Image 1: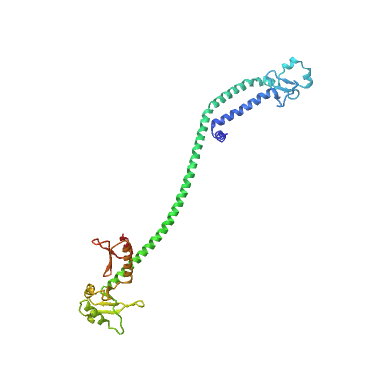
Image 2: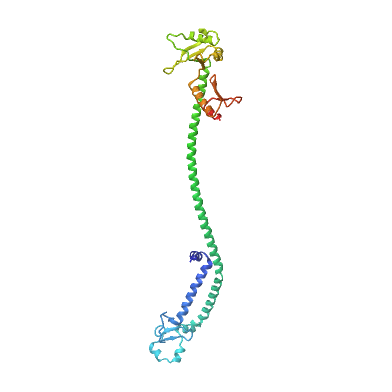
Length: 345
């Protein structure tokens, strides 16, 4: 049954199969005709009676009903002797003889020849069946190949869908990453600008110092107090024209406000910072510091905390620039922003 679809397909498409069908039809027709010679009336093609109440042509051996079919009435049939019945010739054969023909009997050799030809043709076609079977097997092999290809195509289609889904997911991630990168770059740009502004502000304070611990009094004259400190540092008294600014800075409640001194000359300012070591911390609470920006102070505090965590021995600032050193004799590391903390390892 598995070959049935291919056989029908082959019958409708192959010329050889069409010829086989035609031969089979002709055989069926021939056998039906042969059967009709002995069982049916050649004139009306009706079944002959079983009681021998019919006439058989002595020439062609075909049977005829008594009456209209044979041209012999029932009365004449009953009067005929058996010998005459056996010599009876049908109207067809009589007509053929009158015209010089051979009658129905002469068709028999022709039918036998046709039958022989049909058998030969059938044998020829039967010999071709193995070839037909091979073709059917080839068709089955092709079907298996097609089925295999269909499975492969389905698998490839599934993989293609997966690739499309992955590409869509990656496209979404790329868009998200671009946004994040843009945000990071923007933050980095902002950080860079902040650092530049802080550097400029710190540079503008290069002529400043902060004096911490200088006692506070009512109606005080800061220049007099600063010159008293200059004597302790073994420095000359300051004149009004050597100072651009002199005032106390805001302080937390309960704390002594520091004094900001802005010198006209950076040289004078550096001399004060170099002499601060002359202050005896055991005798006074006064000390001198660089005037750092809030951002630099925050960075200094974070740097010292990080250096302490990593067991660095030195962490300091000079003129608003920050440095750390792992141990004595090692290279100093400059710190300009929070990203530089990665250098402290």
